[in-house]
Amino acid sequence: MALESWLTKVRSAISTSLDSVRSTMNATDAIAIISRKKAHVGILAFEIASLMSKFLHLWRSLSDVQIARLRHETIASQGIRKIVSDDDSFLLSLACAELVDTLRLIAVSASTTLSSRCTDPCLREFYRIFKEFSDSGHDPHRWVMSWKEMESKAKKMDRYVASTAALYKEMEELSEAEHGLRKLLQCGGGCNKNRPASKISAIAELQQKIFWQRQEVKYLKQTSLWSCTFDTVLSLLARSSFTVLARIKQVFGIGFESHRLPCSLSATVYPSSDATSPPPPASPSKKQQQCGILESNSAMLVPPPTTLGAAALALHYANIIIAIEKMIRSPRAVRPDARDDLYNMLPASVRGILRRRLKGFFANREKVEAAIAELLVGLNYVWRFEREMAARAALKHMDSNENKCLEF
Image 1 (cartoon, helix red, strand yellow):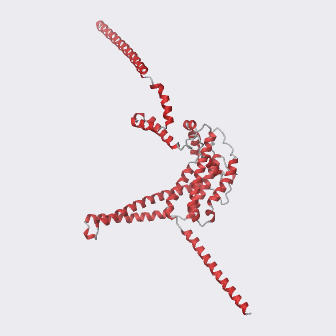
Image 2 (image 1 turned 60 degrees about the vertical axis):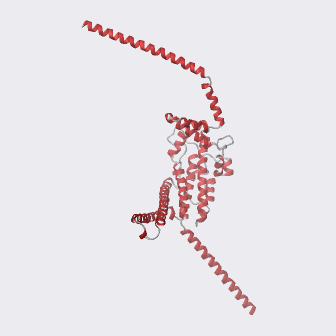
């Protein structure tokens, strides 16, 4: 009996200690969740503002006007058709791949920066859900917004980006003003009695300016992304990501089960005002079924071995084209050293082609000078003939005037 009572006491003591440990752990978890809910993005506001700015640029590039411009101006450009390809389908697939890959990179950045700091379990799994939506079109949380709702969210993000940019500017100016005040105080040394009146006045003005700048910074922190919670920010970015991807699928006629997407997002590359009817939504290719839309579009942007991108010369050639375009627009403003700089920018292969093309024009100096001499002689004969004809006309006019005077 004594042994049983002792065992009972041991069991009760162990269960009590375990319950206390569990309650302590539950309280700790609850405190951690509450602290995460109250946590603000703070200094990460500037990085988030950059992501929002990219989202806005991507969303606006998918408007009906921009899509029509892509088809009728950008893809129809002679330069693109001559340098890249003259296949409309290939060019449209390149544009689609670039948009999808840009969205993927934005979603990855948002997930890496914010997901782990969120309390909502769905937001903590944001990128996995986004990838599933890109592959299957399944939207379990109804994150895809209508066009009207997305436009409202875009205006909200615009305000956030503007206020965060203003906050950054004010914080920079405040930091400079505080640094200037410290320098003034260090240079003056001692107390105010040892400082001249002009320096005391400058210090007072600077202190007043710093006070008002601190108030402005405080206000901007409250109205900008600085004071937003991680859940609020990532929820906005997540819904925007789903909506932009849905819009890309509708615009380019790709994706799965497109009829489930909001009709207000529907717009194709071929606007309804065109004579041609829009193409039917394209079924996913085998590569997209195996790798997924995000991976297949990223792979499509990998340049083939024969392209400038593979040789890391795309940017260099783009700068050459820009320089030539400027010279064509204002040829009178082109200086000799600018032409030399342009020639030095050309790769050796292009210089060789240029020399061969120009050789026929400047190789034989004697023939060129002889041709110019013949032209000058011909111009001389024409000039003399014109003078003789003008003299004859003047003489004839004078004779007619004399006859009129005699008759009078």
